[in-house]
Amino acid sequence: MEITKENFLTARYIDNDKKQVQVLYKKGDETLEHVIEHNGEHPDWKELMSIVSIDDLHANTVAFIKNSQKDFREHVKRIAQADGLIQEVTAELSTKFYKELYDMFYDYNEDKMKEKLFNLKLFVFEKDEVKNSQDTDTKAAMRKAATPLEFFNEFKKLKV
Image (cartoon, rainbow, N blue to C red; front, side, top):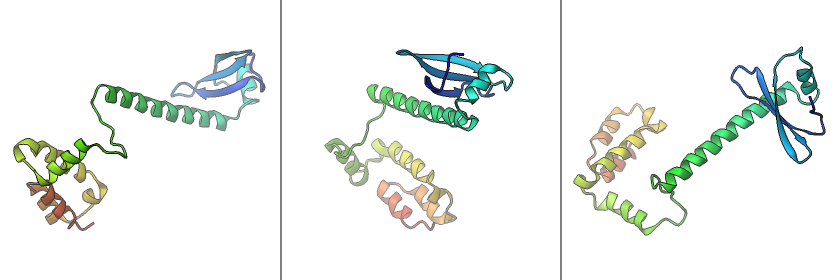
C-alpha cells in the first residue's frame, strides 16, 4: 500500500457491514482511492490503523453520511424549485404571498379554498402541542371550524 501519514487524506467505511474501507490519498496532484478489507491480520489494515484510529474511521463514516444526506436534500430542493414544485418564502415576501394570506383569512371562499383549509388543519394537527393535548373538546371544535379564522380562534383556546 502506498499510503503514508504524509499523503493520507481520509478513510471511511463504504458498506453497512463495515467490512470495506475506502481510503483517499494524494499521489502528486492526483487524489487516489484504495479499498481495503477490515481485517486485523492484513498488512494494509495494520498500516491504516497506524495512520488513523478506528474511532476516527467511524466518525469519518458518520460525517460522510450526514454530508451526503444534506447534499441530496439540497439537490432535490433545487430540482423542485426549478420545476416550480416549491416556492421559497424569503425575508422580502412578495405581494402575491400577502394577497393569498389575506384572501385565506378575510376573503375566504369555501368553494375555492376548502382544500387549503383542510391542509392547514392537517399541518397544525401534526404539531406536538396538538397531538399531545388531552383537550378533546377544543380539538373537536378545531376540526369543525369552517374558516381559517374560526380554526385559529379555537386553536388559541387549546389547553396544552
